[in-house]
Every structure is written in C-alpha cells, then in structure tokens.
Image (cartoon, rainbow, N blue to C red; front, side, top):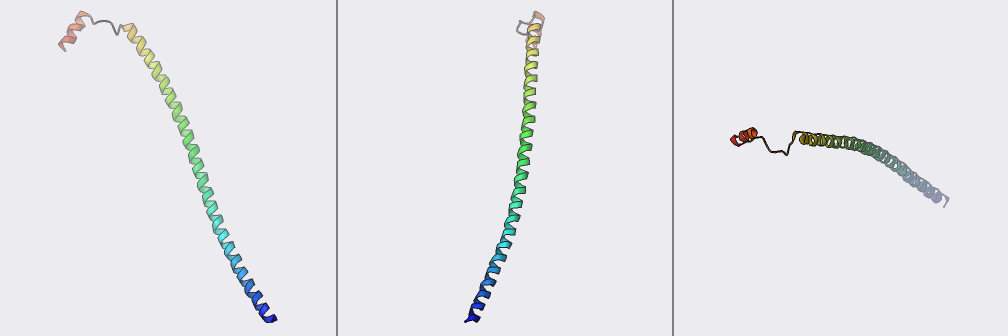
Length: 100
C-alpha cells in the first residue's frame, strides 16, 4: 500500500513540476509580449508628441502668413487709395484701353 502512495506522490510531483515549468515558460513569453507592447506604446507616444509639435509649428507659420497677408492687403488698399484706383481713366489711357 505504501508503495502505491509513493508512486502516486511521485506522479503528482512530476505533474506539478510539468505544470509549473509550463507556467514559467508561458510567463516568460507573456513578459516578452508585454515588453514589446510597451516599446510600441512608447514609440506611438513619441510619434504623437512629434505630430503635436509639428502641428504647433505649422499653426505658428499659418498665423504668421495670415498676419503678413493682412499687412499686404492693408498696404495694397492704401496704395490703391493713393493712386486713385477707382478713378476713371484719363482720355489718353481710355483711348489706349479701347484700342487694346
């Protein structure tokens, strides 16, 4: 009887050793997958930060270009007012325009 109990305990110990080694092996693979996912997440976060910085730079350029356009429009408007842009053409220029 004692012999069967010893054999059963040995089988149980072998089975527990097999299950435990499987769990250690699986834990190692899961840890590798977690590390890879963490690296991918860090890369994605860096890319998102780079995209935000790029958007900030582009917004600053757009704002500067809009301000430049407003300045140029104001300059053009003042030049047109000084030159009499809406004034009728002189007789000489009217004749030249008609010939064209």
